[in-house]
Amino acid sequence: MKTLNRRDFGVAVAAAILLPVTNARADDMEVHIDNFTFQPPELTVKTGTTITWTNRDDIPHTIVSAGKFRSKTLDTDDKFSFTFTAAGDYKYFCSLHPHMTGLIKVE
Image (cartoon, rainbow, N blue to C red; front, side, top):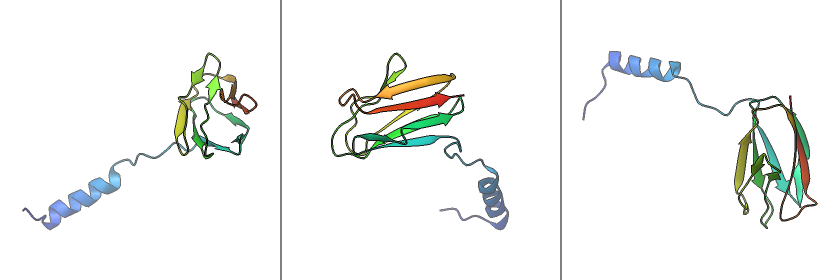
């Protein structure tokens, strides 16, 4: 097993400090599914934003925006993400419980 000398250690530390850290974008958003509702029910975001829905209910739900996106059936704690690349209003609903609706406004 090779041990690092001071110079190698210094290079390793400098590389760790200078390498970019991959984080979620600051403008990425979350929507939670709780009690048969999307929370928040409406969001306004910029193009390029990724929204992640998380099902916190103990029954399955979906996220559907006709002609735009459709999640698989989400069980408890499952997630679905979509990146909004075009401006516009995206109405969505749960296909299993159509009274559950939401809106994403993309600017």
